[in-house]
Length: 438
Image 1 (tube, rainbow, N blue to C red):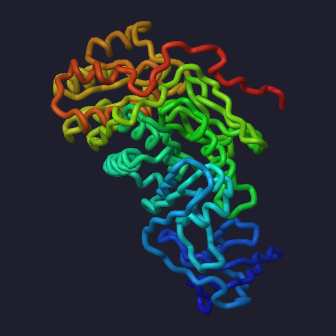
Image 2: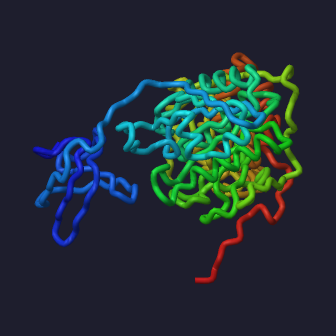
Image 3: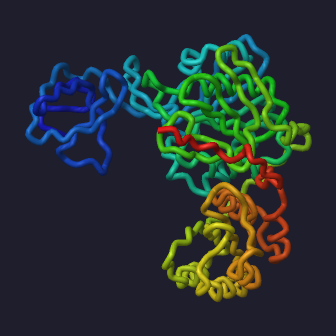
């Protein structure tokens, strides 16, 4: 930390013609020694190299910083739904709380009710559980297994909906994991995120959570869905099937889009009006039929093919004991001819090799060209229209939850349409219309 400046102080930084003013935040372990991280009054966090700059402490200890332990809090409402909000971390619950002096990726039931008063109209009981404080890129198959079990326990306790706050970067992976782990869901499980932190004026978190309430109340489906903005404005929020959604932009509020499938539903604003968009859905099941199958293997790899890729990479993965490899191939599902022998060796060693496509949209067809046919003969398994990330998660779930099956049974299970991860019919409307007016 810069001499005389402490975390929580309000500072003014003059660097050339620029002046910055804000509260000093804790630095990342990777931050340079000369970088000061401050929260500006508009809510943005910025890192400033203060080399050669004038740093003035305007007020000391404006905000006290502390980390509170993981917690559970409950409030009562006037509605008739029991809702549990499960916080895993991520932008949606990241903020500086200037009243309590806490900097934490956490939120209490009271704070959630203050941010989204509609919870009181829909919920008879709102429970907020701070489950973890992790960046979404730090989540692992072992974490998915634990989270699936926790969500399963909540549903078995009789809740009417589970709302999971999650970082957006790997939301597809977690949504897919839960979709495979939670069978015959009697209620929707919704993952909600935010492209803007909750203390920024442009935050999209509140609208995404409001839409979730309508889905809990009115949706006919019992599926794991991702609930995010449909446009960059506050027009509507989309409920995307968890195994058919992908983050397609690094920062836009409407970054999440359904791929090779239509979104399940839409909630229009103002008014929070619910509308089904996809007639193909899994209906809510009976509570007595609900099952939790939540074990995941870490012996799966997602490998992107590229021109010049060394085939020895596949051999290396086989030698290291990986049990399944998802190869994201080109076009209809191709890799270089020279690697066919490595795929054949993987098959002989009992390793499942799935081929998906880098194009994201469309489906694999390995019967068209000779390379694809050679790969099929070598034991490669076509991924049809499954997303590469979802194929990775499904294999992890299969190997973890059903160990010891023979190859034929694993192939059959992989191609079984468990959570509608496959869509047999692709309409033209499922491909985005790019604007060419510039």
